[in-house]
Image 1 (tube, rainbow, N blue to C red):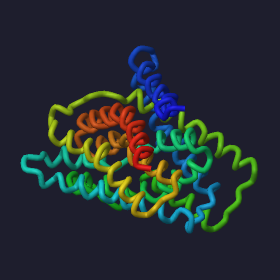
Image 2: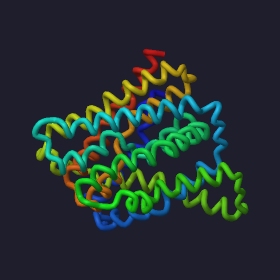
Image 3: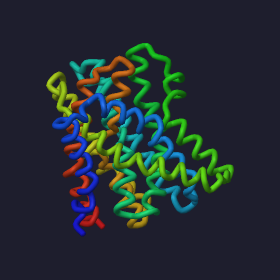
Image 4: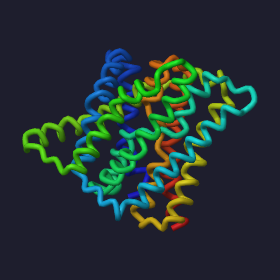
Amino acid sequence: MFDVLLLLPDFLLILVGYVLCRYTSLNRPVWESAERLVYYLLFPVLLFNSIVRTPLHLGATASLGLAGVATVSCGIGLAYLLRLWPGVDARNQASGAQCAFRFNSFIALAVAERMLGAQGVAWVALLIALCVPICNVAAVWPLARHGGHGLLRELMRNPLILSTLAGLAANVLGLKFPELATLTLHRIGQAALPLGLMAVGAGLRVGALKDAPGLATALLLIRHLVTPLIALVFALMLNLPAEQRLLLLIFSTLPTASSCYVLAMRMGGNGAFVAGLVTLSTLIAMLAMPLSLLMLRLVG
C-alpha cells in the first residue's frame, strides 16, 4: 500500500478532532480536559508500559539509539543558534525553539505500529526513552532562563520524563507485574493514541505566526527539512538495517509535539506563536512524511 494511505487513518483522526472542536458542542474546554488526561495519565502509562514490555536488546538497537540522539541533538543546536539571528525576539525564540526538535509521540507510536507492527512500537519506545528527556531539558531551559523559572523543578514535574525513567528502571530491574495490572495498564495506554491524535486536531490554529514569520520559517525548516536530511546521513553512516532506517526517517519527519503549547503557556512564553507553529508543523508533516519515505526508497 502507498505510504500516504498507511498514514491516512492517523491524520484522519486529527481531522476528526478538528471538526468536533470547531463544529460541535465538544468545543475547546472539552478538549483542554482531554489534553490534560492524555498528557498526565494516558500517555505516561503508554510510555511506561511500552518500555517495560519491550526487551531493549541494546546491542541490536545501539546504532538506532545513537542515530536518534544525534539527530535530535543537531536540531537542538540549530534551534539555539537562531537566538543569534539579528532582530529575533528573545521571548519568541525561547518559546518556539522547542518546536524545531520536539516530536509528537502520539503520531510516532501510531504510525510505527501501522507500518512496522510491534517491532516498530518497540523501536519508537526506545527512541522516546532516549530523546524525550533530552528534548524536554532543551525545551525547558530557554523558557526557564527567560522567565526566571527553576529548571530542576520543571524537569521533576514533567510526566513524560518521569514515566520514561520509571519504565527504564523497571525494565532494567526485570520487574514483573500481575496479569490484572498488566492488562489494566495496556488498556489505559490503548486509549492514549486515538484520543491524543484527536486532541492534536482540536488544538490546530494558525495563531500569531505573523509576529515573527522569519523565525517561524526557520524553525519549521529545521523540523521538516534539515532534521530528516541529518537523520538520513546518520542512517547511512551507521549502516542501519532497512527497517531501522525507515523508522528513523519516520521519527525525524514527525510534527512537533502538541504539548509545546502547554509548556510555553505554563512558563510565560508566547503561547499563541507556539500554537501556530504546532498547527503548521502538523499540516506540513501530512505531506513531508510520505515524501521523506519516498526519498528513502530512492536512496535505498
